[in-house]
Amino acid sequence: MTIQKNISLKEFNTFHVEASAKYFCEINDINELESVITDSRFRNEQKLILGGGSNLLFTKDFNGIVIKNNIGGIELLSEDEESVIIKVGAGNNWDEFVEYTVSSGFNGLENLSLIPGTVGASPIQNIGAYGVEVKDVIKSVNGFSLDNYEMRTFSNSECKFGYRDSIFKNELRNKFIVTSVVFNLSENRKVKSNYEAIKNYFSEKNITEITPSEIRKAVIEIRKSKLPDPREIGNAGSFFKNPIISEENFEKIKSDYPDLNGYKVDDNSVKISAGWLIEKCGLKGRRIKDVGIYDKQALVIVNYGNASGMEIKNLAEEIRDIVLDKFNISLRFEVNIL
Ligand code: FAD
Ligand code: EPU
View 1 (cartoon, protein in one colour):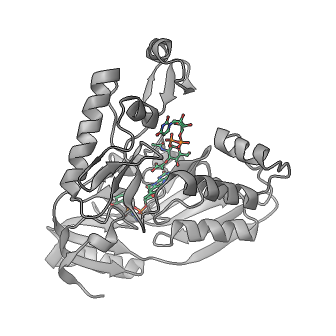
View 2 (cartoon, rainbow, N blue to C red; view 1 turned 180 degrees about the vertical axis):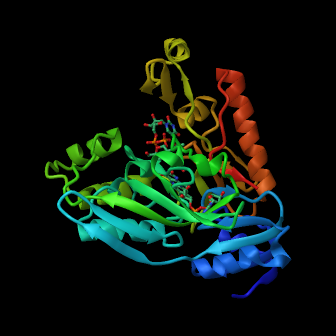
């Protein structure tokens, strides 16, 4: 394993912002991971485990060691009429894995098609899209603890999954490195086609026999129509989480803005669209130098070329302040700011 010094991270983050790492290495298996973590040269260095760099923003150089995770491997642990249990190395590309499950007839991940990044990052923020969250099909998460240098397995409930949230973003932030994820898929699981955009897609096309591969196709088409491809325009998907507000506050805003939509999350709380709030503030499509608010999806901040991480963060803070001022709702960042 080669340790590089002072290397540029520009090609390792989908915002394509410039930042450098004091040390950088790529690990291909658990042994390499252990040897770099326990190396006395790096014991007191800050550590950043990096997947596809599609949910983070570098605002400065990283003064520590960046460990790029390339742990591969897909292992079918068991398969019967009820379920298919698969263990997947954390460094696998997420969408290539989804493609593999769909083409193998293992259902459960098709709604999460085309999300960038790695398998190992999927439990960190409990990735979600089009009516499914990855927690719905995760059986367990394996990894390496930076506290005691031991391997540990977390069951689904121990991961404390929530909306864009898990134990790995909270108590275990920067303390646990996911090395593999075990999924519980099924050849018989019913497809989920209730999400508004998916329902509309199938009714417009008059498709009534909805298979997982049809769902994958639909999700890919819908996503391509509204989200920028990071290979062309730098971005990290939704910059903010959708806020959850009280039913009372929801009714109050709706009386002024009848087009507000919401999804009940429990008896007294409603999740509303941050993109809608940003759009209502007149910000959609706004551009300052090379930083902008994407014109097809106001939740996405984009780098049109040479924006710096700080410029992107400054715009995000400005958006947050404007929304707070107008709606008295404080948006939370989804993207990890470094
Ligand atoms: P990185 O950005 O490399 O890392 C993200 C965080 O996880 C960092 O804090 C990192 O240290 C940590 N991390 C990464 N790997 C590990 C590991 N093995 N062990 C411990 N910590 C780790 N997200 C959604 O949920 N739904 C979407 O629909 C969605 N759409 C997107 C669309 C676009 C165009 C883009 C650019 C992003 C989108 N995202 C979406 C966000 C992103 O793709 C996901 O969060 C993805 O899981 C990030 O994976 P990554 O490997 O790139 O993680
Ligand atoms: N909307 C607007 N204006 C906008 C954007 C959205 O009014 O500019 C409103 C519309 O009413 C639209 C609704 O918001 O119908 C929902 O929009 P969309 O389906 O695009 O979803 P989202 O709530 O903006 C969330 C996730 C996405 C995920 C999609 C699909 C969050 C923070 N974002 O976005 O995840 O792909 O749903 O399920 O929950 C990500 O996390 O990076 C991400 C892209």
